[in-house]
Length: 494
Image (cartoon, rainbow, N blue to C red; front, side):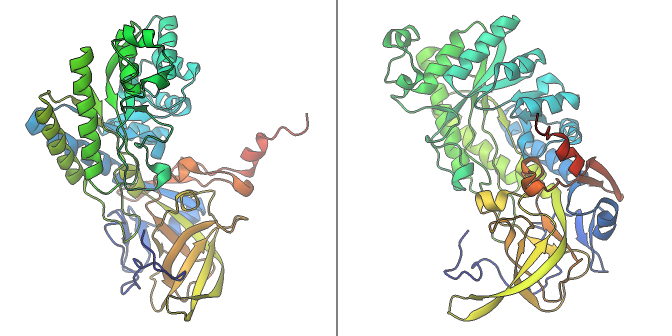
């Protein structure tokens, strides 16, 4: 995100020579501008959607979601097929999850990764078979673990030794054996925002593979010796040995995830090599077989013209070759591989429709010290329906959607209606000089981490999710929240 030294505009943002053009790297084919100048979603004009469902509204294309889900599954299966590899693709439900989305993912041949008891409950409500579900999270409660084991989920991803022990106790109480994957931190520093980088040591997820961290597991030297370990070993080795010896745990393999919104291939290859090396060492040193490896997700998408994501085929092909090279170097067989795309499936499937309200112009100084005009465009949503700009300094692309954005374009900042100066939807964009109240703006690639992270800040109701499909059909996936919905939770003075 390289900005110029000026507060006026970033270096990557070019003045639009064709402002009506929808960049196909950002906008999927379901989002098209017609000859009339209006944007349609799966053949439905945004003016009709605004009239039928109001604004703000999340628009989510079933067409795009299904196509991207199927494409990722096929890409990974085809990439590993020449090596005789077996592959499972899990949809990371935390990015966007409803009962319909859960069902679509399963219908397209994916599995489902859940990150809480609530997400697991939604998956159950959607009828997702237990064996096609994974339960993630760094602090699962006993109730969440019991629910998962009772529903016979395919695997639980254990995040620490205490959690591993808790899973074992719950499994023993139920008379079951819990299928577990151990999450490890490969120490790869992914090129992404610090808040969504998850493979370095100083963060809450996973178990360290660094030598000398065994002491952090809280076991005595005698207890470590019983496991065939010492304080010179790693925390992850302790977890692995404990899981291997427990009669209540079915150790399936290792899991890692290096972060989100990552474009480079190197980090994924490096993480895979480190985890495979650790697996080989554990197999040789402790005799522990680890038949499965989950390499997570985090593949970036295009939010703006500065982003250059890799295709699913490129992602899968590069991972397959690097994983196979590591296995050959280590002299081990290829494990069952699984991957967890989330944002890369749901993100481009969605867009958010807003109505323009107040507009005002201010003067700012550009890089040369000249006074320039910037326009502030207020819309009827904001940080309550998209907190990512304020959380991660995330950038998005916006377009005038109810008519063609012709003529002069002004550098603009799209802001929300909340009582916060940081309530910014689009920090830098160009919008037509003749923009007026009542116009409709459409923000691209909001299908991931918008609806699921929405809030009621300032007691603003959350938008509906309107799903569209080829053939011009639309229906409510999630209804608009009402003020009555919010007030029902307030029990007053008891």
